[in-house]
Image (cartoon, rainbow, N blue to C red; front, side, top):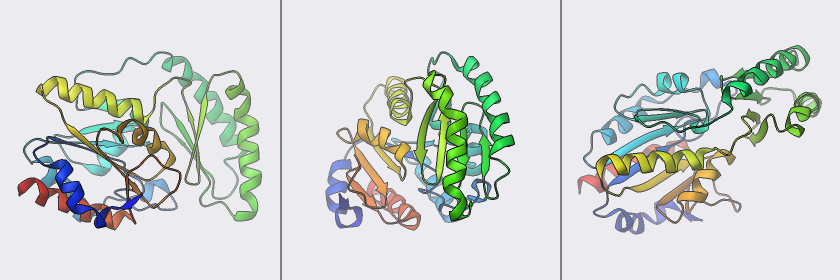
Length: 264
C-alpha cells in the first residue's frame, strides 16, 4: 500500500480530465470511531467540504454505510447526493433500485433473533443490540474485556442455528458482528449498481474513488481497485485498497485536495 499523501502527483494524473464519482463510508472514515454508534457525529469541516465537492461539475458522491438509510441521511444532511444504507440494501437518490428477494422473510427472522438477543445477551453491561430493519449489529466495544468472550459466545450460540439453516449471514467488523440477509449483496455489489446507474443516466463513464476503513469496505475495494482509486483508513497488509490514510482527519484533507484537483 502507498501512503496517499506521498502519491498525490500520481493520483492527480489518474484523475486528469475524468468525471469523478466518490464513494464514502461513514463510521471510521468521515466520523471517528466512538464507543456508542449514536455519538458518531460528522465534523462541520468535513460536511462543508463534501458540500463543496457535491457542487463541482462532473463530480458525483455517494455515502455508503452500514447504518440504516434514514440514520445516515440525517447524520450527513447534504442534499443532491446518493445515500446507501445497510451496506447497500437501501439506496436513495437514484430512481432504479436493486431487486433483492427474500427480505420480508428475513425481517421476520431478524425480529425473533433480536428478541432473544435482548433477553440473553443485551443485559451484559456495554452490549448494544442495534436493529436496522434489514440488518442487526451486535456492538461489544464498551463491554468489559473479561466479559467479551462470554458475550460473543452467547451471541453465537443464539445465532449459529440460523446461520446453519442459511437464514442469515454474519459479517465481522471493528468490535461488531453484523447479522445480514442470506443473499449475495454487499458494498461491492452496491457500488457497481450505483456506478452503472449513474453512467447510464449521464451517458458517460465515471472514475470511481472509494474511501473506507473496515472489513465491509473490502467488498467495494475488491471490485473497484482496477477501475479507480481505493483508499483505506489505516494501513493493512490484508486489503484490496491501493492507498491508505492514517485517520479521519486525513480524509477531509484529501477531500480538500480533490477540490483543488478538479478546479485546476
